[in-house]
Image 1: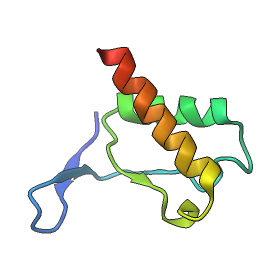
Image 2: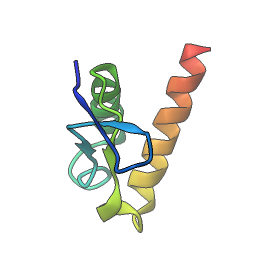
Image 3: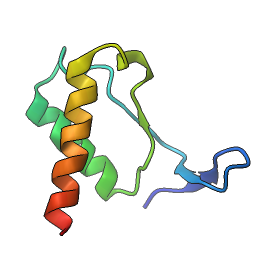
Image 4: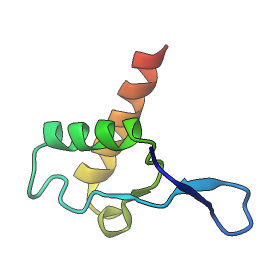
Length: 75
């Protein structure tokens, strides 16, 4: 299970490990990205590093679609 640390003074706890998605849409498929995200979230990781990809729609859209699908599957 993941360990958590405070995010500054926000009161938000974030996992000490983050999932970096720089390779999404470039070095791996969208399906691979979904698998990586599901495994990370299932392990308690709640910090996703998309900074490098903010201007690259495939990674940003893929992560949003994955979160949407995960929410629907929980309902």
